[in-house]
Image (cartoon, rainbow, N blue to C red; front, side, top):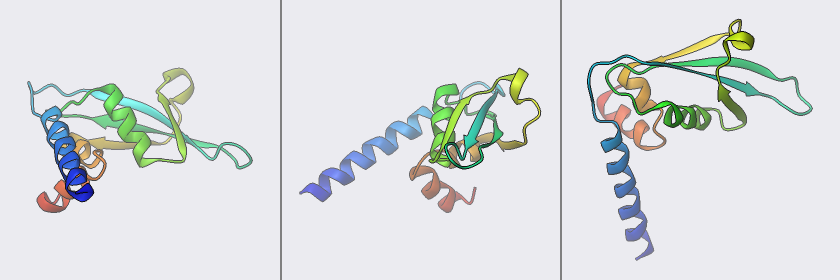
Length: 115
């Protein structure tokens, strides 16, 4: 019983996630976030994650959370051009990058559709 409820909950979450990723007008938007890792006793290092959304744009906050999911032991903050312009940039572009940013579901979809 508990397993069936978990499956239905996961399926509902997947449907909501996919519905949120439906294509709209062909507008390319770029979002930048600063990722800082190794705080505390170790030496901190930072880099910038640049999202180029293409036709699918789930929004700034969704992509910030997706960035944090990819770097679970790091902090993710909004990009500041004054302090972060010289940092290394990791670019994630277009729909495949957005799909890869979806925890669990993105991995499954990219395995099926070879993102």
